[in-house]
Length: 414
Image (tube, rainbow, N blue to C red; front, side, top):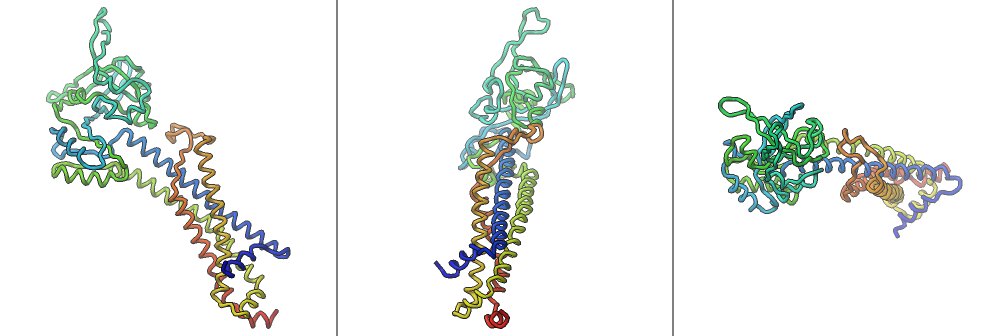
C-alpha cells in the first residue's frame, strides 16, 4: 500500500478531539450516497416509462413503414419480398388504413380503420392485447339475424375494436356495427356492415377509443383500392437498428418509395423524453455536487488540523505531490464509499419497485398502474463516473493548499 493512501485512511479515523471532523466526514459520505441512489432510481424509472410507452406504441405501429410516393402500392407482394430479404427484418406485411365512421342505432364515432392480414403470426403484438376474440376471425363470415327478417340471417365480416370504443358505441362481441365510407365519384357515403368479433386493450386510451381492425381484403373493398394497399409494415429483430435497416430497404427498393423507421415517425415524442431524462440527470447531479462541497469543507478542516503532521512529513523528505495525494486519496475514499453505498441502495430500491408494486398510479394518466422500472448497468456506471469525478474535483483545492504548506511556517508559529 502506498504510504499516501495509508495516511489518508488513518485520517479517516478521527481522534476524540477531532470528532466533529469525523461527523462531517460521515455526513459527506451519506450525502453522496443519497445523491447517487436518487439519481440511479430516477434514471431507472424514467427509462421504464420511456420503454413502456415505446412498447405500447410499437405494439400497434410498424418498426419500419414503406410507402409509395405515387399513392397506393400496387405491387405489395414484390415490395414485401424485397423487404424480407434485408438482414434483420422479421416480418413484412401489407396494410390499409383510413378514417371512417362507425355507427350503431344509438351512437357513432369517427375512427381509424386498419386492414391487416388476418393471422396471429402476422400480428403478434395485437394478439397479446386482445381481451376477447381472435385475429383469425377477421377472415371468417358470421351469420347475424336481421332485425325484421323473421328468422333470416346475413353473413357479415368481422371487426376488432378497442375496449374504449366498444364502450362508447355500446357494442360487445357478436353485435353488428356499420362502417360508413365516402363513396367515390358521387360522394354518397357507402355503408357496410360488420360484426364485432373481439376487443383489444392497448393501455393507451387514444388507441382504444379511435382504432379498429378489419381483414386486409375487407379494407381494400372499403377504400376501393382493388389489389393495392396503403403500405408495408416491417418488424425488425433489433429496434435500435431500425434506422439502419430502413436505409437498407430504401436502397433495395430504389426510387419512388418512402421508408420511415419508428424513431423518425415519433421523433418529437422520444426527443422530448430523452431531453426530460437528461434534465433530471443534471438536476439530480446537483445533489452530489452539494455533497461534494461538504467533502471540500471536510478536507479543508483536516488540512488545518494536520498542519503539524504535514510539516513533519515534509521535513522527513515527503515531496509536495505526495502530500497532495494524501488528501486526494482521502477525498476519493469518501466519494467511493458514498458512491458504493448509493449504488447498492439504488439497485435495492429498483428491485423493490420491480417486485413489490407499492406505488399506485392512475392508469388513465400514466397508462400504467404501477411505476415501471428498467435497470441498465451502463447508467450505474455513468452515475459512478460522474460522482467520482465531482469528488475528485472537490479534493484538488485542499490538496493544493496542503502541498503548498511550508514546514518553517508551522515551526515558527506553532
